[in-house]
Amino acid sequence: MMRVAVVWRWGGIYSDTDVICMRNMALFNNTLGYIQPGRLANGFFKFEPRHIVMHKLMVEITQSFSPTVWAKIGPPAITAVMKRECQVKRSEKFHSKVPYTCGNVTLYPEHYFFPIHYRHYQEYFVANRGKTLHQEFKSSLLLHTWNKANHNNPMFVGGDSIYDVAARTYCPAIYQYASRRSHFF
Image 1 (cartoon, rainbow, N blue to C red):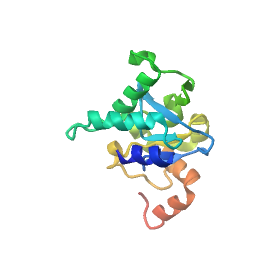
Image 2 (image 1 turned 30 degrees about the vertical axis):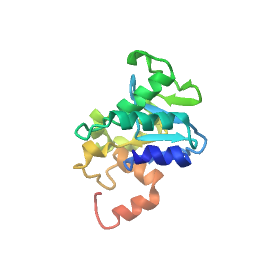
Image 3 (image 1 turned 90 degrees about the horizontal axis):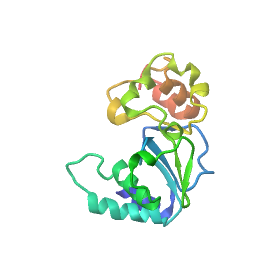
Image 4 (image 1 turned 135 degrees about the horizontal axis):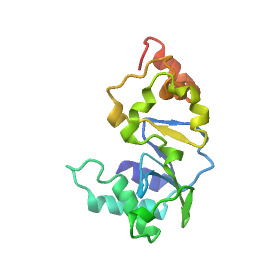
């Protein structure tokens, strides 16, 4: 709830902590991404201050909050808000293979923000898989590594996994610090 309130009030970017940004996001505004066809995600978004969608999302999450249901106020809430905003009734019609603009909000296909589906999070940690990072993810803006699922999987330094290569390339200072005294983090 706080992420939505802060972005509504001051505008800006919200990103989960398990995201590696691969492009400058300053050029984007009022942006959301699909996590899968028909379902938007809230692990990354960017909005201008006091945007109506963020206000409507605050209303939605206060009405649908359920303390025993994980993610109830996450993807289901933002998807419901945007379906109403875009006047779309059926989820399967609420998806595009290219960025789609609804009002002044741009919705990006999965490969932009969530190129590896959370059910396949292990792909981030396969040795040598990162050698093709720049080619395989050339249209991706960021990588979401799904810590909720992968928190027990160490990233081995120098293993050239997708995560290893992306962290080394796009977060060099953090990578160097995190790997200074260990062969994994």
